[in-house]
Length: 251
Image (cartoon, rainbow, N blue to C red; front, side, top):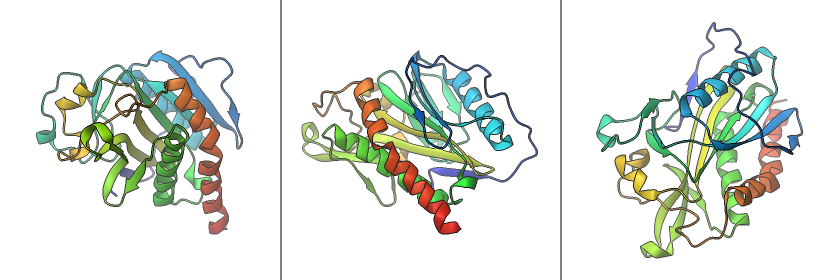
């Protein structure tokens, strides 16, 4: 599975769950199962966010912190997964970060909703493929609440839809890329709400040169970050129930 990187159990110790923690928006809902739902306002620097996510994952592994679903935005960056091909970095006009997640190059920037998931699959069936499919289905369901007919395609990473402005061609509206370390997940998804799509021109997104990218705005869908976040909250129970079923089936 090209979009997933699984790491064996290392001998690292826990990080602090509160290190470099960005402010959460007031009223962020609390999820069942002791999962924190955090929404960060403004643009969160990529390197600091990556460090916070990794520290939180270490703390979850050690049993010192709650699991986390974190919604945020980044300044413009390109990120490289473990299978990134330097040929796909066409124009490094923005900072480039190696991430440790699976997959190839992708873009993050303003107008794109990022979702980082730090979840303990050790308590949820230890089924990475099921986790990835459940994550895809969650994003697809949330987009469906906004009127987007989104779908996944076997053998082609990401979340897809048909863009009428491109003659009905399939276009990518979301990316999925995860890392699993000691059965705790890192990274997650990126969905294009209203980013500058020209920024994707510096890379071959996910190594798929033949497919364009799109966004809610390009599709003519009225919706902002808050609207999409509400759709995620509305549909998250099915995602979490799917992971719970994996644990029940294991038992």
